[in-house]
Structures are given as C-alpha cells and as structure tokens.
Length: 66
Image (cartoon, rainbow, N blue to C red; front, side, top):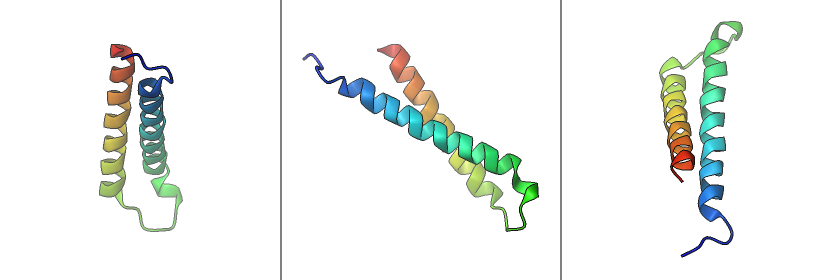
C-alpha cells in the first residue's frame, strides 16, 4: 500500500528530533556539570544520553534504509 501522507518518514523524523534532543541535552548537561551549584546526577544523565543516541541512530538507520 502506498503511503500518500508519508507517515513513515514523518514518524522517523519525529524520532530523530526527539532522540537528538535527548542526546544533545544530556551531552551539554554532562559537559556543564562543574558550572552548577546543584547536585549533578551523572548516571541518570549518561543513561538518558545513551537512550537518546540509540533512538537517533535507529531513526537515521530507518531513514537511510527506506
């Protein structure tokens, strides 16, 4: 069946944006950890960054595969 509204591409691009934002936000939080006075949660930041990287990689692979 043909996809007239390009929903497959739209979902992949949304996942790419979401995963990229998770990865970039966690990366910048990790790099800026010494400039804050609050408590820093390194394991949580690294965990969310790795999930964001995985989602980004998966979305790019899905876009390239189609």
